[in-house]
Image 1: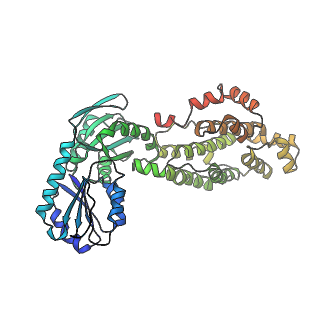
Image 2: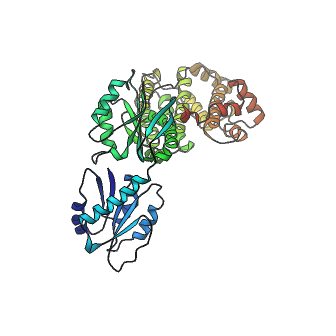
Image 3: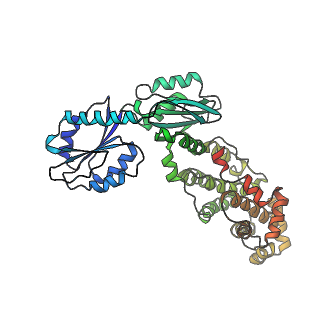
Length: 465
């Protein structure tokens, strides 16, 4: 199956030429009536041949320049008038508009695709490292890569289910299995075997019908065999992002577009209303805010740094109100949010705390990165520091100093794992005015130096799991 892009702003011409190209056994035709969409469509469908009408006012030269950035082999047939000057390049063919016929097009395609096949390398066994070394024989030029992870509490990708899936999609695709075991499934789809009705939405629907909808599907389209190993390595790293989209499918391109780190001050501002709701025992608002954080902020940006920052704040709230923290070890985002909302923190919070306690906690939360202290908070609230610290500890089982040190330490861990800030900058950013004291405190609390912690818990660990 070859993908052909037909570009013309003359709709009458499109109606005339399209029937000449109809051959569903050989071609999948993509019609582009506006030249501005040409390059995007070319890349999206990984087109093998372009037919471009240059007889109207169409900036075909600029389109040709845009296509040169693409790395795969393709050919171009330019529809031209007799007086049109056409660039002479190896992959460009010219047909005069008055001489168009089905025979001419088929002759061109036979020549183009015949040359394409001759340029293919011989069959080659590729060794792909995916949970161990897996060998696979590749005999086509271009592939789609498809990865699935199941969140069922059982083995899903067994021999029987994989065979059923292959049979289900056999009408439009063949599969080459790289890895299928337990809860992971990784396959290659030879693009030349795909029928015209193939699309990833259809594939996702069939995959979920066989393996269950409690799964995530990630794909990478139109990968040249020469790049298979590097793209498989990328797919392996990106597979960790399936955590975010249970019941959905995403492309590598989608992830690259969405994977944006939000500024800390914005995330902090989004988390503060949750803390206030908990302090005022407004459970309904607290539950609503958590859902917004997870299903809008986290899912919108698909970013582990964002997820970890919100987890950090949640664990502070848990430690403050329940004296416990959560071990965030869930299989998917939905499982995580379901667990959180069923804990005691979001069940019958009781009465709101006193105004002095609420103001104390909010001041600590917003100012822990400064040189704020018990004395400063007591002065701000016009209360005796010993009295304030006593009622604080009675309610939270923590002193104000305990709370400040907890927040400073946890944020320092976050910066070490997820930023490139230097240790001195992190000490300053977390309220430690003296780097020597910070280093001793950090080592005492974690058993590691700051640099050892960074090397151990860097953000890269997500992609290497």
